[in-house]
Image 1 (cartoon, one colour):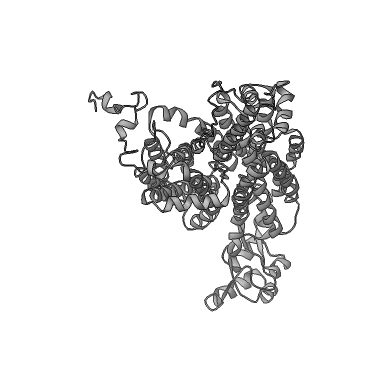
Image 2: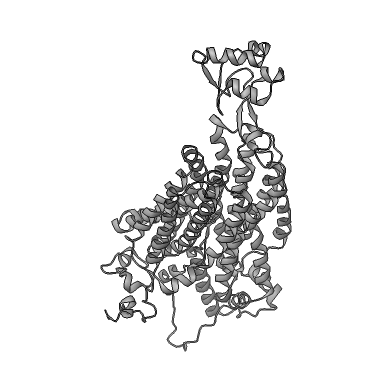
Amino acid sequence: MDEGSKNQQHQVVAIADNANKLEAQKQENEEEEEEEEEEDPLTKALDKLGEGSGFLWMIFFFTMLPPIFAGMHSNTYIFMAEVPRHWCEVGELRAANWTTEQIRRISAVDECRVRDYDYRLLAGMGFEESLVYAREHEAETPMRDCSIGKDAGYYYEPGSTQRYSMVQEWDLVCGDSPKRATTHMALSLGKLLGAGVLGVSSDRYGRRAIYVLGILLFVLFAPVSAYVPWYWAFVALRLLTGVSFSAVQYSALTTLTEAAGNTHRQWMGIAFNCGFASGPIFVAGISYLATSWRQIQAATSLPGLLLLLFMWFMPESPRWLLSQGRRKEARAVLERFHGPIDEPSETSSRAKRKKQQQQQQQQSQSEAMSVDEKVEGPAAASKSGPLNEQIKGLKTIFSHGELAKRACISYFSWMTASLTYYALALNVDNFAVDYYLYAVLLGVTEIPAYLVPSPILLFFGRKQASSALYGVCGALLLLLLGVARTETALVVTASLVARFSLSAAYGIFILYTSEFFPTISRNSALGTSSALAHVGSIVAPFLVDGLGRWAWWGPSTFCGTLALLAAAACLALPETRGRSLANTVEEEIAPGRGRVSFACAADRERAGGSCFGLARIFGKKK
């Protein structure tokens, strides 16, 4: 869903209302006639290219491949970390040519413990005599873990997994089973760190610089992780790979958003997210042919060398260059695709003043811009501002009870969405379904989920849509309590529809969050909500392994409960459909603002802004 990254979702929101804070620096000359201000020719050329040009399609092409790699790596875990059937290995009995079944009958308590007999003695006695001995001494013989002892180890049943798993290579079972989940957690943690550090850096050092850095990190660390022999080295490389995904995706999506015009921005944002959703489909195909987890890691990493070509040709965002006053560089980029661009004479003091004002405004807009993203699935998330601005924004939020309430609901809803999104993807073991089919269906059903919010929001308010979709997800997951695990078709259908609803809800809630906070704290709210979403993706593999060991329906029930709580929490938020964005806290929490009924919210826009809504449908005008 991100990570998620993922997220991220269906509508690309450019929030440029900080420009309202700029005071007009007009220096009128009473003797000089007022002239109509001309638009900056470079901005005009950029807007023209953004409505359809070789420049736009090049940017679009260069930003489409990185999300596919992110989607693949976010879903390799279910194939690379399969857990085979296993028991404690008893070297003395194996050396005596005992069969696997004979060893298990004599020694095994369960898959993680063995009876601590003198196995050298038993090996000399033979199986039948040892069986009698074991029955006589079973009660008085202590037990030990498979990992304890001189010849400690595990026996993995051949053919119990589709391929050689990292679990077999590093014995990630029993007491070390949390290490298995850590391999996925490291990727999510890397995305969180990358978003926090490199997301800010792209505003300071440029989109292309962070894009290039992310690609270099990916092509260096992702392929190497397929060959390192040490577990902790692999985990460290996974973390750095996660950092690279945040670097590339944040900068790529921001560049695409700044390059695309109004005609193309929304559908290109959706297409960007669909790249992440296609990841599970590619992984399923690769895994079907692979005989080792290392082959999967290599096959999803080595093609990333193609990104080196993208890195070479990817231009810097002209809009960012303009915001930094680097007009000459912006002009060089634009003229490659637009042709010569004429600018006003630099000798005119009036032209200089206009350019200065335009640069200030563009810089303010660039700093205020926030883009929807799925954090790896919904994975998606918001670009954070500088640290001091984040802290200032958070102080503003939590100094007002109403905004603090909204922040807590937002944090809980984002974390629930991300946690559930990844938990349902990783829960394939507990659902006992075909890995390949499930992975393909994850991708196929997620892509339409990016398209659903737009038509939903034409007819319903943000509060209604968010609450209803979270509620559908929660209800379906709780229904699995009454379904037998063997009812595979029903289990898969319910979980996929639940995940579909969740992805749609997450996409709407990202937009919703940006609307119920004032400008002064909006970016802080989005950034911290995104961080909580990453926390959800970090926790997901541990939740699946921990609760799944207790009951197959444990993870889905836990996530379903959280989703229902999120649905209820949404009802405590104001409806934002059809209202303007507030700049200050005082505007946002003014009496009566945002108190829109369900009936009114459903049809407010079509009613011309007045409150008719569903009441009009039933003939009762409000």
